[in-house]
Length: 575
Image 1 (cartoon, one colour):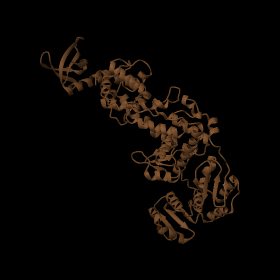
Image 2 (cartoon, rainbow, N blue to C red):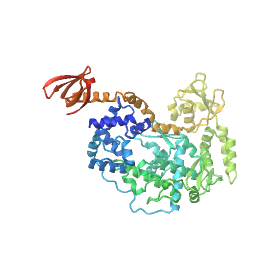
Image 3 (tube, helix red, strand yellow):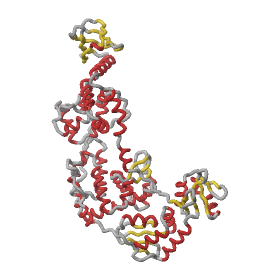
Image 4 (cartoon, rainbow, N blue to C red):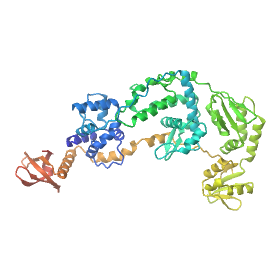
């Protein structure tokens, strides 16, 4: 690395504002804990060959081409967008010439094999096929979010979905296979409907609200988020996206990019933004140019939503079409959906109704809701099940005692005996204490484990009144965005390196740095020294020591040891 280039980069870094500096640090993937003391440390680190190699995969194809041409010809990058990008990545100087350290590292980069195009003679699909796919995708994502709200998805250390939750989603019918699970999770994350919290994925507050919106709004909002989440190299200046045939070589120096591009394309096909050939759907064609979703066109192609169902004597409900989301969400609190299609089937049971009551439903209001949306009234068997569930509900009560411990009480002592010997409840550590059971677990943990085990349980407050526990474990959408951004964490680093720099002592600091490096390398340097009479004299020295404000070195011309005051040295350079 050329000291001159390191100094030039350090000087430029000192002139940019905090936003530009933060963007550079983030894009170059610099750790917020970097032990840089000043801008000279920053410049040397950014021009280190390993740091340049780490930055190379981040460059889009136009930037790679610009660097290739400039390095090969030893000429500046032409003025324009590419030069500005490379300048603000710390790879070229303001006049467009690659820094020597960056150019040297660039020549040594290993180049991955060219990726195959994403589209190869794929057939076009009509909008009817795409609309059917859009409807299926909407249903799958809604099911995954509904299942994740009360029970977050576990993720492995590698950032993938755990095998148990993958199986749970497939067995529940939310997705048909493991590959589709990954597509749906990826869409949920890119759209901000799911967010990572520790070792889990949770539904965000935005995702919870999404579940109550209509199908057209759901699809359009998600598609817009997916477009906005595209890497910069796939976007156009108008806000749209590049043709799918261009996606495979958007980041030519990133060996991981082809696989990521394939995943993105698969998500977009699954969500029916594009067809198998890469053609945008009729309702998404304006999006490709930076516009909005054509909601009217989408509405014409999607099946219409209904707000009525058929309740039957066998405790099933049949929806003759896609239910309005708010109705579907409430119905699924009290019934298990058995089939998912444009006409869906739901089944009520003592357990499902009991779970709804435990989650906050009231038997009377639930009966009123079902009567309102039913085209066939409220069948007697279902009315009977609602009445029985209401009578059973609350036989077990979970709350806290005077000391704050969780306790379980019951109107029937034999019910406590059953709990005490139930092996499935062993994790709760229930211990008999007179006419109650006590546990070290929280009220929520005890309540939901009893509810999941199909016990008629109610949560109560300190006065014994029934209270509703919300099982949904959400994460704030803004917190997810903050967690993904490192901008705030760079504040300490930026303040430290700015505090070590001032225009008055920058030259002196850099001179001291050059002298230290020369002494470490025992390099031969040419120093210019200002003499007491105001004139300057040059000495060629082999630098041997630096300390006490003085530079020591052997004068090559006279073969004597010289000691020069650092304060009198005007400049130093390699001889």
